[in-house]
Amino acid sequence: MAKGKSIILKITNNMKVSNIYLLLNNKIEILDFKKYIYEEFIEYKNNIINRTLVINLNIDDDCEFIFTKINMITLCSYFKLGYIDNYELNFIVDTIELSEAIDYEIEELSDYIFLMANPEINGQFSIDIANNIINILQ
Image (cartoon, rainbow, N blue to C red; front, side):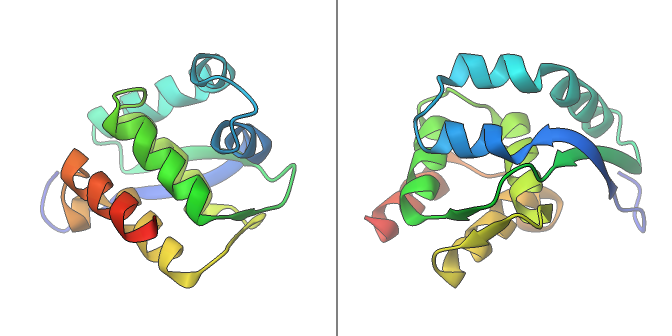
């Protein structure tokens, strides 16, 4: 990305917060989750790869929930086990970060979400970082 340029996320409706809730609370399988978000995710990923400056992140705040330590451990575990890659992780945490329907059990969770959602600021999220977060929260 050229210096001085940043990505702007534009929020519209489509990515359902309920799908994230179901995934992080083990109510749906990861493969089913990926099917539900496929079209929005592919567009998001292509925009990131092509360094598009404005990315439509389609959020449907169709349910409210509290993002818990267990949810964070689940998300980090999916990443470290290879069930989701960096792009999928970024897509999920961008949605969590920008959703008005999600609150945090403890404030530190929003710091972890920020860390995960902003690789251009914080560097690429890694398995080591995921393991550190899991160890801290357990």
